[in-house]
Image (cartoon, rainbow, N blue to C red; front, side):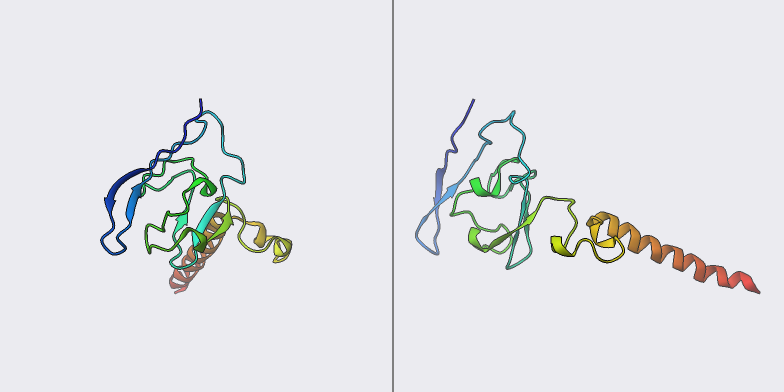
Length: 139
């Protein structure tokens, strides 16, 4: 079963005199899983807000599961109001950060996901702190 997005006009924007649309988008097929390309997150170049298709955008009534490409062109960043064209594709969540050609360098650390890097960094700091505290036992 496919459904078409149905934009509804709710109010008039006082600053521009244009009608503001309250967009309530529904996935085209609820049973169809998102492809890896559709799961790509997009980051606002102005403020750093990240649109994640798995979460959607509650402020603009965009349902979870709507890929970035299916969002209307008049959609704006919910944080700073930047246009849709000011967003950059940053890939799916949980992927290693950085350029793909550089992932083989850095003793394997570059292939870690951001969460794994956090564990490595803060775990190392915690162990270092414990070693520092153990110096008090040398008396």
